[in-house]
Image 1 (cartoon, protein in one colour):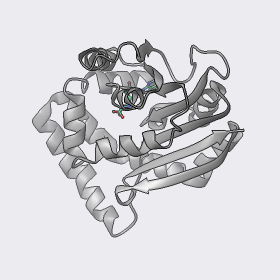
Image 2 (image 1 turned 30 degrees about the vertical axis):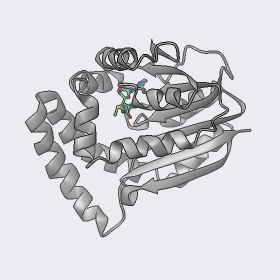
Image 3 (image 1 turned 120 degrees about the vertical axis):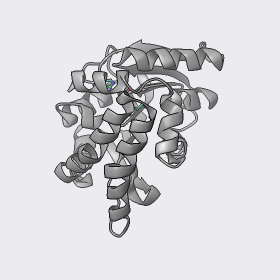
Image 4 (image 1 turned 45 degrees about the horizontal axis):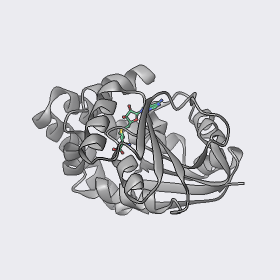
Length: 230
Ligand SMILES: C[S@@+](CC[C@H](N)C(=O)[O-])C[C@H]1O[C@@H](n2cnc3c(N)ncnc32)[C@H](O)[C@@H]1O
């Protein structure tokens, strides 16, 4: 799984933000903003896992948080570093290469944690949720953003979007984006069918989180889950 994620995102790092916004009809930044709004402003240190090009990390830093952005894929981190530098946020955002399965931080090191579009790329999602929860201190917050599958009638349009628009749109951008475009629809649908929300909520609860809530965005095409560590 790690190899798959690295090869997919190495090919999609260049102009990632622009293409992601374009292929989501401008929804991508809106989903990021809602995710970040789930983290209380007083959380000082926030870990952003699967930070990619650091879009969420930058939003968090602009709210005044100190952020560590962690990702597996070098080319994504290079784009992240370029962005953080051009926005002069180096004193607020630290970028680290690492894997969500085994975080290089002690228990309870962070006041809050965010992660985005991660769980479809890991072998053992409940283990990863437990590992993410391990580094959040008691009383701290965790929030995630993942793709979802809209309910009918929107589901039919979503299928056209993921099975036709994404691969064709990706093809127009690059070979790397074509691969991502072909991969996403079936990957999202398989994950959501295998792991409905009550199961995901149980992973969070076993990881020590209470008040676990979910908000579906854009008719269910994206889902934000958040909760508080006991
Ligand atoms: C769809 S991108 C999302 C990037 C960014 N968070 C955003 O929302 O724009 C998913 C990211 O997850 C990273 N990733 C996948 N598996 C990972 C793992 N096991 N540990 C850390 N990062 C991982 C990939 O390298 C990629 O940058």
